[in-house]
Length: 173
Image 1 (cartoon, rainbow, N blue to C red):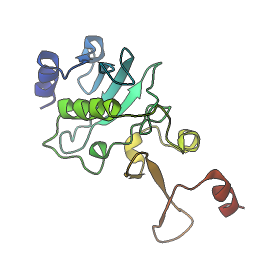
Image 2 (tube, rainbow, N blue to C red):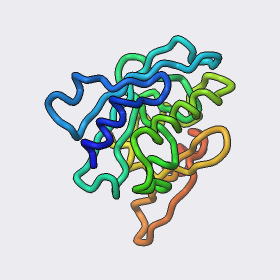
Image 3 (spheres, rainbow, N blue to C red):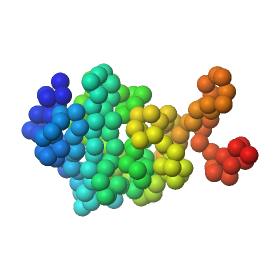
Image 4 (spheres, helix red, strand yellow):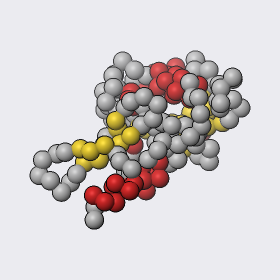
């Protein structure tokens, strides 16, 4: 399945995307896709890289996808460490989706951006997150992403929405 997707991406990549051929020389389970910002958008002329990591359960398990390299887009759904808040990368994943559909969703996400800014919880998230963005419990809504954190002190699982830093400090005193 992965070989078929690799060939599809090589032969018919989404607009502005190309497979970095060097990235697949040693392993088929990790790819880098070079991406150019779409014409007429806030990202026109900018170059980015997406890292795709595939588990042995792909396509039943979503790939780990994040921006990598020196130029991470400034976007309300992209954290400065490259993690992307996009529902199809986690809970809305379907085996019917493909690398190409993920790429198109990311192009669409960037192209529809009206203002370059980081998510409101960027600093906190980057300091405290797991290296694997799939381990994050995202709360998907509207113009920006927020996080749900598990309160590990209680015996039952309870989640709370990311809150302003001041309130977070008050709760942990």
